[in-house]
Image (cartoon, rainbow, N blue to C red; front, side, top):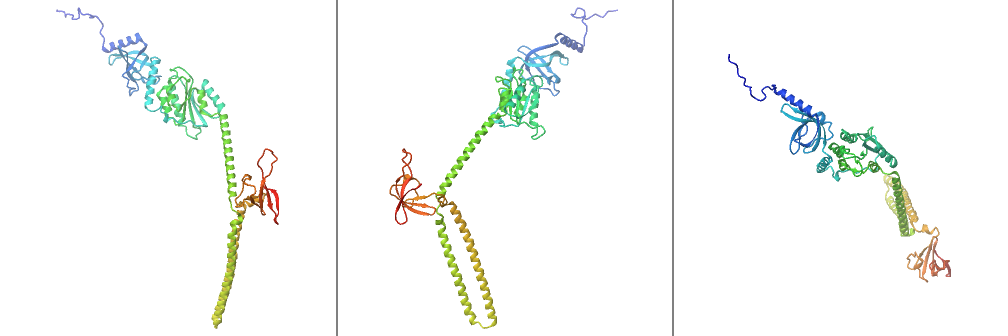
Length: 488
């Protein structure tokens, strides 16, 4: 019997156990997971295209010599504080494992953060350039803060010194109504809460049960770049840019800055200063109101004084009452006399005519007609007389009313209170004693008549230093004899 030769004799590993492909892949997977477990891996993100349709993210981490595949499951991606971006240098924390379907190993990332402050600043500058290119930082799109808001909305943490300082500032300056939307201002999920609070305030209906704020304040105390990173997230920046309510950013101290500071309508150096910007100071409002009232009273007083001066000047320029009504009154009297004579003459002429006609008429019908015409003529004559009297009475009342108005506006009413009007020989009114030359003949008009006077010189004043005073005059009395007197 011939024996079958053993073909494995003399070959390396001829006695090694035999594995299937699946068994070998599983053994390699267990060896990697048991040998490394959780690791922190630093590298640059490569090939990132955003989440897959399933919600998982697939990309690679590389340095200048090697590359390792990476995956972030959907559940872990939603909890990440920093989202992956192409070319971003990060520190990933996760578990090393294999993917047997393609015979490759990979890291399953559970936490992700930028590799140091330099990487954060680079990411911040990149986002800043992106939003600036979209025009989110333009001054033209920023809204003016209301001068006197009734309701102020605050997005901040409900605990800590920030909200206490802000409420204290409101109480000291102006008693406005304050609505607080509590949020986390640091850590996982804080950016989404801040964005939701801004949009929530804007979604409130005007006049609703919860009043819609007139101005918003997003506030947080100071901290490191990592502590303030939530206010650099895109979701927060876009929510602030979309806000229809004027928004004041008060994140960090004066030296700190975040992207929400650039997109907000105003950036306050501290949360306390934001409260001061939001509402005016009550005492300053009172001072401003008092100044405006003083200016108003002064303006009204000046306007009344000017109107009074103008009225006096206009009254002095009005003509005499008798000069205005003398000619119309004369015309009226003349017309009255002519009309009366004309009516009498017309009546007599018609009577004479009818008498001549009646003499030629002999028949009874004609006599009857003549009688009727006479009666009608008498009636018309009476009506004409009454109409004339009524017309004359109406015209006289109108004329008397205008005469009374003219009398109230004329200077004679002033003369009746003890004043006198002085004119020179040419009839020009003299208003100052300095305009009178010694020896000038004057006409002095009182309320009950006028007298002629002659200027003799100024009257000596009680003040020895005074060189001015009333003019000393002599007046012509009835009978041609003069008398001395002083006119004021």
